[in-house]
Length: 204
Ligand SMILES: Nc1nc2c(ncn2[C@@H]2O[C@H](COP(=O)(O)OP(=O)(O)OP(=O)(O)O)[C@@H](O)[C@H]2O)c(=O)[nH]1
Ligand SMILES: [Mg+2]
Image (tube, rainbow, N blue to C red):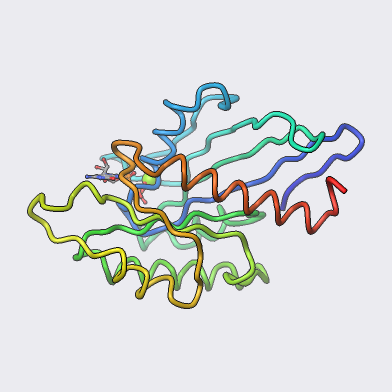
């Protein structure tokens, strides 16, 4: 849950990158860390197992400066995507204000994307949050793999699989190159801050 300190006019909120193992969540944060230096307010913390898989989470603090008179700070987190880290994923979701669901465009990951979205929905439910109500942005990652030998799904197919009911804003991306990373994040920030403004009547 966001922390609002209206006396000091400070807001701190939490955005979580969710999605199946190896879909590119950590890569999104790494790109943001490298690229948005002015907004990054501390080191990126990653807790990995061997082979770069996320074990607990990645964490990246950002400061957006003053928005409508308030100093806005954002904490970006990723969950570990591997099935076996289910309880850690739930823990990382605690207090989430906005979500990026990173889906893997590789055809062979189709089922994994859908299972991960279900897992997200169930974990949110345990915190009393509806996936339809929370600020959520979809990212269809690894678009650069088109024509590289392993078939990828069309955007339309991914929308049908994952976004038919949610109707969340969606972005094609290639996190390794940085394509779509900024657009995804800024849309999620926009939706999250709008939702906080509505909830707390801030900026009125
Ligand atoms: N070709 C391509 N590879 C990508 C892209 N994004 C990530 N990768 C690669 O996919 C692999 C997994 O990326 P990670 O960012 O570690 O995936 P993750 O979602 O954090 O995985 P977990 O921590 O296990 O949940 C790495 O080898 C990345 O370089 C992309 O857009 N295109
Ligand atoms: Mg990771």
